[in-house]
Length: 441
Image (tube, rainbow, N blue to C red; front, side, top):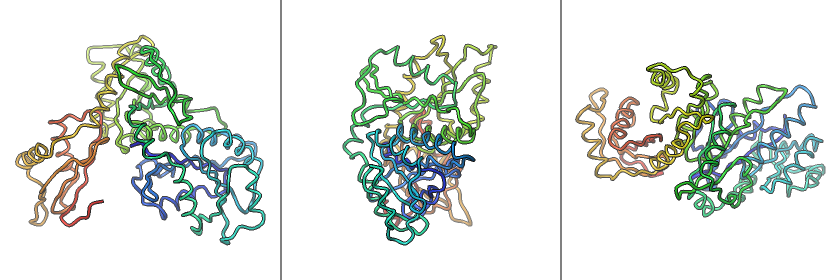
């Protein structure tokens, strides 16, 4: 199930980083910290009162002049409007309301999205008389907190969670296959979206309950309902180039979080960038389906093994996506464009595949006979029982005698054996290892 997205907006020095870090590190149970992303403190999956959500920090901006502060605040607000289910507007209780705060408040009021006003740095525990100025922003009741002292955070989280879409709404949304088109600018993301929608020419009405239609395109194809999530325009002209890259990742993270399958668009001539690898890693860690789409293949001079050599180089750069199928296309020449949807649909189906428990245990027992489990100091790994406990992505639970004996290489061996028998092309596979006596999560 896609998680509700909470975006934190606020000007520099209001305490966004402290607020974000305290929430994910102290008050919340972390579901998953995505490697390669959280070192920038952009994204974390978390849980509060039984509801999981994605927390995204749009901040980290440290401009040199006040003129840039206002423009970058607008950028943050626009980003939050596009991607968030709930927007947290963080303000400085000591400094009070600024012109930048008022302008962003005007923008947020027009979004129609839930906005939770949180006033930070109320360190005394009680708001002073200036606190009531924050009511004039017209965004509802401001909540006083001190992120540094960890006071008021529980009430703030309760308010945030109260605005999450209901489980019924999320279940209805699950009926539609959501495909995110990700990758660096100028790889042909928008052109692919337009080609796919134009070719099928069956546009469905706007998705109920969302204002993300600026980047979401719902349509039907062969009787199945889809939504294309276009992350094109990810980079905008800015005086601060580092922030452009940050916005690129933040917007991609939000699109990936809401998707079932990600199409990683690669310019055949330019190849992969470090940022592409980072975004690909996010999709992998999130358990999303992935298809590698190499566009502009018409511009490449071909020899006998050109495609195979290109594929080999690409796989070496993305070893963690060995399961992802690839397709070489030209949107401009309409080469193999239709097949992209076919592959995405197949990957989506693979993410929901279930393996019968009996067959799974027989497969694992045979694998253990072919390659004995590892041992240490005379003690050998034993696998008592295996069952598939989840889908999207497929999740397998192993009951074993010792986690310490389950080496990474042996887990990879078991994954390969499962893939040999059941495919699971395009989707990651997750394992959880339980010892006897472990309580179910």
